[in-house]
Image 1 (cartoon, rainbow, N blue to C red):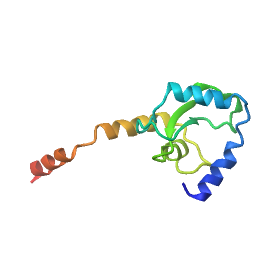
Image 2: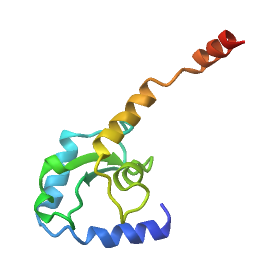
Image 3: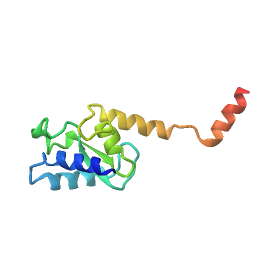
Length: 119
C-alpha cells in the first residue's frame, strides 16, 4: 500500500472511538474468518459498510460489517472503490459477484476447447 493511502486510511480510522471496537472486530473476524471477495484468510479487515463517520451508531453493529482482505486490496477495491475517502453501498453484492465470477471462470483447458470450436 502506498504511503499516501496509508496516511489517508489512518486519518479516517480516528473516527472509531468506542473502546468496544477491538472486541467486536476480533469476535466478528472469528465468526467470518474469510474475505468475502476471494475467500482468503490473511490480513483481514472488518470493514464498516456504512462508514462510522456517517453513522456512528453503527460502529459496533455486526450487520454493518463485512470481512475483506488487505492482502489482495479487496478492502480498498470493494469497500472503498479505490479511495479511502469513499465508500461502497453495494460492497456485499460486489464482493459476492466477484467471488462467483472467479469460481465460474473458464479453466485454461476450457479456453483451448472454446477456441477450437470457433475455428
